[in-house]
Image 1 (cartoon, rainbow, N blue to C red):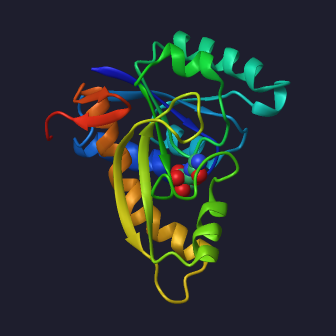
Image 2: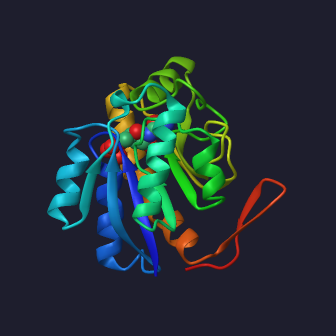
Length: 210
Ligand code: GAR
């Protein structure tokens, strides 16, 4: 049974999907031992509390730079005996000292079909605004391994979602969450915990179905 630590910054609907998947048995090779928020007052912390999961605030605003924050977070992850780390709406970029310590054990959900609309500056609603502005007809979500380069790690799962006439960024964001993120993030978490993913030449492959 792996110790899962979930990193959050906001509302935590993806955290909720992970908690629900743990309760329904979709996630069965690990359990969420701690939720760490980069922001005090994030609603995700309420969700953790309601599920009886420890919540810790490590405020990004209290650290001078990414390096100092990454060092503090790494210490906390070690203290919690983290095996698998899940970014669920975590809006802070960490430097390589964290991903180097957990090779192919950190995953992130991103609200687009990578390599579209990703990288530094593409996060949250902004991703959907850009997708609508570009006039794409299909978007979606991606779960990938976290590496030192933002949104560039091996892709584990993707799911496409159609754009509909009259979509606003908010409406599209909700559809991408419902139809894609809340499904593929728990599944990818189970795959990683169960050791069912191999990575070769930057390509992730799921070795067995669950
Ligand atoms: C989600 O749409 C997630 O994919 C996105 O932020 C939202 C967080 O919502 N993450 C990123 O943009 C990361 N680059 P949540 O707090 O309700 O899970």
